[in-house]
Length: 138
Image 1 (cartoon, helix red, strand yellow):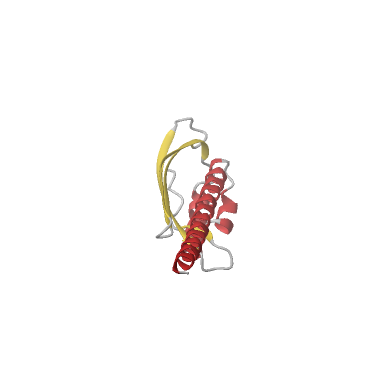
Image 2 (tube, helix red, strand yellow; image 1 turned 90 degrees about the vertical axis):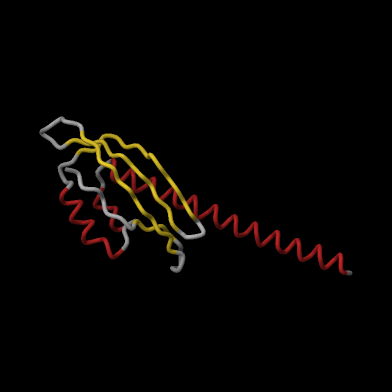
């Protein structure tokens, strides 16, 4: 009887741990999808959509100002140099280099964008929110 209870308890613990790892995998996949979507919005100059989807409420006004300042900027490439995701802390980050120019000049410039993301699992549906501003394209 003790062996049966021990096996049953082991099975329950195994199921619970696999559920947690499935949840972690889903959260990590969500970060990958959301961060990729944000990068594509910036890359294709669809910045007006970003504050509605990705930006923390406390940053929206300042983010909107950065969008206005970058209105003439033409981004033509980016490189993700670093990515980290700490699911236990609900934090993630990206370091991105944006290559751009500001017409009428054709001089290529680069800017480093260190992004910090936070997972908000308290709402009905957990989601990743950007906690840093769009870089200044000078």
